Length: 221
Image 1 (tube, rainbow, N blue to C red):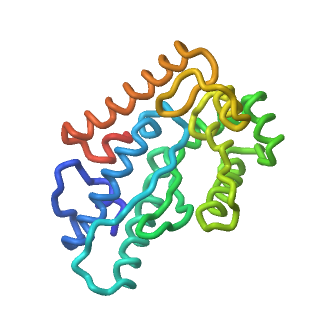
Image 2 (cartoon, rainbow, N blue to C red):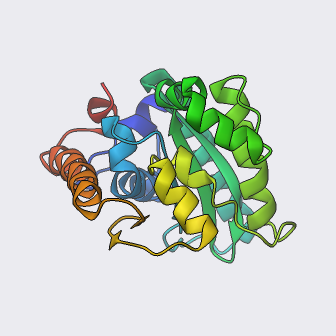
Image 3 (cartoon, rainbow, N blue to C red):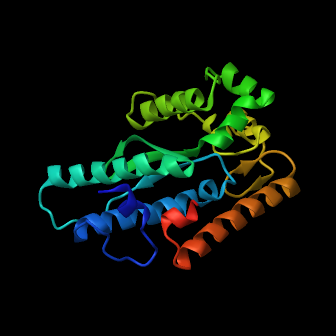
């Protein structure tokens, strides 16, 4: 699958150039899942997002063939997304789903440069020399969790997902939550609701643009 075909997906499913029906369906399912789960990252509101993808049913009865097509599809997006400011990596597999991480390096650099955030992460064993180094640490810990090697989920990832540090610390320490939205808040409830509102508005904008007929490439341009 070419990068051009992968990025040409629109909400309304249509055959992709150079792809057969099953390849087109797989790319469409992946791209629409990416927009649904990572809209705030696409819009530049959040640094990163975790999501899982379950491939659609396939007429091919060969399990090896299905896996190969899934790898090819994810690889096409992993090659193409960096040209549009995003990066994508596989964390692991759980039953019929693939666990993935997508991030915007320019925003992760902001985390690395923030003294309070980087100090917190370094105290938790993460390396913050660069965005790629920090994401690499998170990728390693998240992959270890999804593979069953590490039983503890690395809740510090909340920082990478754009959650305020006070909320990440509050969750890890078992504090008393004050508000709940896309994440649990432990500080000012009114400020948390404003943050939730900004994220929700950003996600709605991205999904609305996709629903209007824009391709994935156009969303990221």
